[in-house]
Length: 262
Image (cartoon, rainbow, N blue to C red):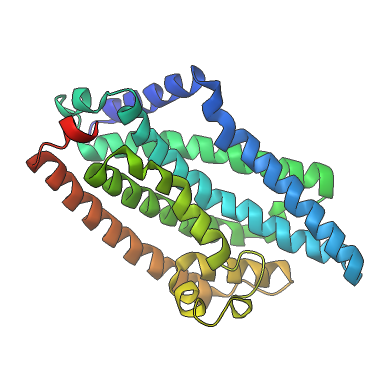
């Protein structure tokens, strides 16, 4: 893998973002809005039940960690979408750039966007609600790592769908994340979901990440069993997403979908 090509893709992603301020919305506006929204909800329900600090911590830790998987997925998926929106995909396919180099470049720049988005949410949570995400301690590292892997895996599925059915599948960039939000038990235990949805929720690696985070927020040690289940699920999801995206890329090339979809 050529490091110069990887960095060139990251620089290109930066130039596109810099010249299109509307694309800062996911990275800047959503984290701030979510931190204010769920912080306020936490204060309201905490006041009703006499436990404001615990309620705010529970909701804000969930939404900040959720933005890890959100930013990881959206950054990579929209990075690929930029090539379809600008009709640049054909140009990339005739260069010596490999798929791995392109993916690495987009993911590298995506990490920078993730850092900005999550940091903004954390700053707002601290400034307005006196909540410090660092209260999770070193537990934050493995939890965030699993969420990043899940976000990248979901992004590969989205890219595979776009390669197969065209730009109409771009809505799933935000659609899959919208499905993860209620099913992952970010703000409540899985047992609060309808019975029919609980097995689906338990199969998601994100569910176990947030279950572990809730334990830490409540003053318990990090449950490594939950982290292990989450990590195993993230690896399995990544393997399936790579397989799916690879198959869709092969179909894309074989059937000449570049002229139909892009």
